Length: 503
Image 1 (cartoon, rainbow, N blue to C red):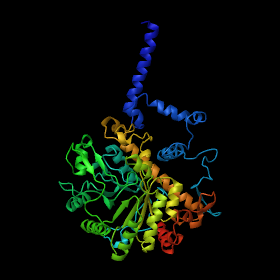
Image 2: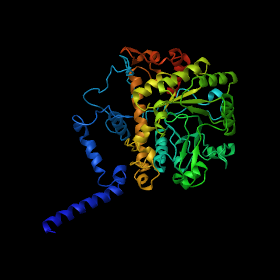
Image 3: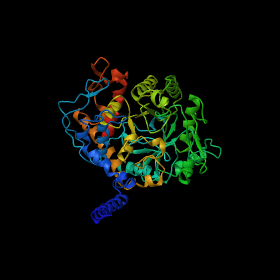
């Protein structure tokens, strides 16, 4: 080979080797750690993307489930970068469902405090006199994502980030592991597989539950009936993925397939569910206990609310998961067609509890693509007390919406158990980004509230958030979704929200 050819090749090869070495050892960018050298192509395309997309491929609002503008806002928020967008809105403001917030001519003009704290208006557990009742420190919290579905590094980043942002972290149904013990307050989720609270035969064990809860920083317990991503469907974790650490967290044998049934075996009726909640709350010393479910047949919610009202017992909180939820992979027909979308689902649940006179007592938690300022503000305006977010935190810690979650080969190390891929995710750095996203979301919620002349986003007037209806008219959101404003803006709720901001 000619020297004139050999020298450039060696030079280029040397440069690429140095770049690869740097990429593998740096910790800031997961993609570069996992895919040295070629990972730079992703950042190059991201850099010139806005210019290229004017002529080819998709617009900023076409991609699903999260479009490019939404992802850019999350990434910028997580990194504490500029979240402003130039040259006006790309939203179709006349589109059905578009949210319009009516601001006040006289904003409060208050500075946003450090960390943008927004506490919950209700005290969780107070309605049933729980010994460990508490006021949630944040209206925005991390929704259920289990270790096993997400990597060790991802869970560690979420929990440490929750501690930094002073919010709660839901464990998901996969039990509690060491990666959940990084300072964040936990909501321990009990699913149909009873992971972390089961006996040798896979049945629910109260003793195991008490042991698990007492070993960690658990603030509340959530009984999961179903989830929006795959309501009414169980799950199977292949034995190949049941590593020693996952097995220890779930209380199952290493290397053996682990099934999550489609229903609970510890109860089979509304009365038995309420009794189960009370027995769990008593066994753990008065930690608040709630239920999570997607919404299908509305009669269940009517029966639950009426039974609770009649007995003075039952869940301290209810998590309503919309069918938009997506952190769990499932059959396409279930992800696309089973259960109600969040807004319709919450209207069903809120109506049932309002009719039973429990709407000011039970804490309502909403989840299902609510991790942006406008939908979060709308949810709080319609009676939601706390907002849970899942995929948005995944993106904050590095997810690029590759949609490979179900393959175990997530390129960013978030939704995988692969050692090489997960090593690319640095929990220390990503925890800061998770906190950055949560704080940025709360900050924008406070700014929206201030612009409307109130201290808390839940205090924005019932008529001051409107939605475009099917005829193109702008109507109050409560009217569009069929929620009673007399309940969402009752004197009791308004007083509670004002009081929580004074704490």
